[in-house]
Length: 370
Image (tube, rainbow, N blue to C red; front, side):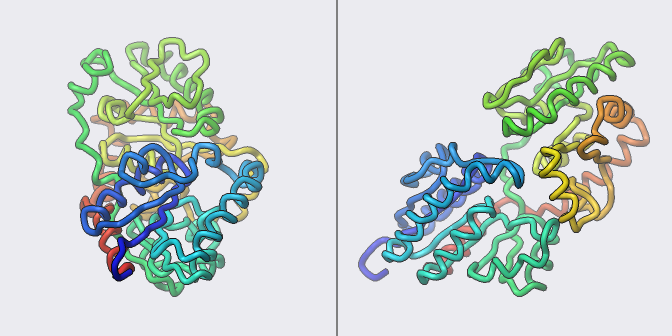
């Protein structure tokens, strides 16, 4: 790299990855005068990367759903492979999105481009035997505390960098959040968090909405707010407030929540919000997933705590009546259920590590560029 700026390729295939990748690019450019090109979205662009391919047309959820985007991904991979072979880049940073990025990692390594993979594929959950597919990865930066030991035991150079959610701005107080949302500060609040992808929302919104209505029959004073995304629709909300934008205010305002599994449960833990976890896939995707599952829980808070902190219901078990019964006692902060869950959530927060994940990833990138 003598005499020229280092060239880095950053790849992120969905909105969350775009945000995490943008933070890494910002931290990296504060350390090295690098030229950054990317597959990503608006946040990578705002961080100073030249976005060659936009991610919006590629993102999917589920085994079956991914098939519809396979051709587009393969064409993208062909273009990226050609750039790797041409010696265009000194480093590839791949963020999450394993279905595509495991192939991209192999293409980079075959061309002699070192690979830093940030946010590991959840092979510990689905397919431990597939860890060998990470062989092309020079360094793996992981965000869950148990992942470093798992991947190192399988021969991958993994480093726990902490969770990027630790770098989010502090949540407003409950009183401030309720004023921002236009809620009565004295009445209980239930938050609904059906996800950030339209396909997730389409599968969870109706059951979450109907569960809230069941609870309101017992608690007519209950206020309900859904953390909504402009990419999805929320039919027939009735008295439920649809809040589009940053969900942080909803987490801060709520006494308890109904949450999809995944990162949403960690956001709830950081907000100290007791929750009930639910998730639904297409029936075919679920049948594939349940046969591959190798862990006792799907909720990240439960996996990190190594016990069931929050109850979780999958697929057909996630009915309005079941979810309503599970979340009802959590709406009372003084209840035994709410107190017990908050003890578990405190443990989860402690295990997520200190702030600064993106900076630690950038430090690894600088090592690989040296």
